[in-house]
Length: 201
Figure 1 (spheres, rainbow, N blue to C red):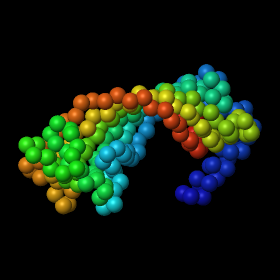
Figure 2 (figure 1 turned 90 degrees about the horizontal axis):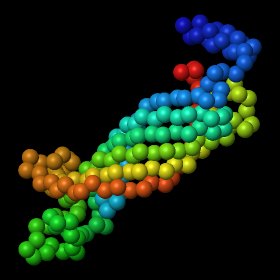
Figure 3 (figure 1 turned 90 degrees about the vertical axis):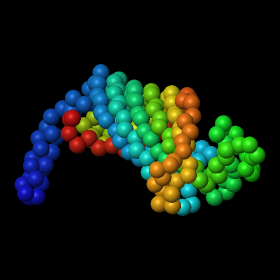
Figure 4 (figure 1 turned 180 degrees about the vertical axis):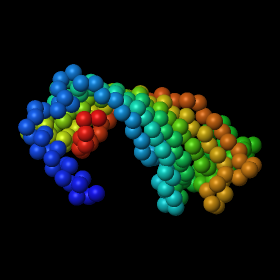
């Protein structure tokens, strides 16, 4: 099967050399896709601490319009969720109203930061420009791409605190929780991506 597959690839490569550039390299090309991966968060509480790494998850959809080999404009919607806990250096106490104290306050129901677990869900609506740097030095038929993409986005987050949790990091049946109001943020950043086009689809 491996031999037959190698012969098929070699035959396809020889045929492709006699044909013009693939339609994917033409102007005015739309494309869409799905994405997924891990998600991490960092604020007062963090996904990565001295004792454990909490792996979150994220999923998204994206679509783009290819104006040229060099540039395409892409929009995406991504959502995810992750858990965070405190670092050992966080020696504060948090009350039910969200106020922070350096010691348990009288007449306040306080929770030690190291006993807190936060669960944050978020969504991001982003617009980015993809610049394929390899298009400047390679032929139109190349399957490789190297995209540099500046991005602007709107991000919404919502966090819930849980306290306490057990030693094996599983919430107890009598877990108390506190829901915080949704927040909105402006995101500025970018990404770099190395790609290889396996087929026209």
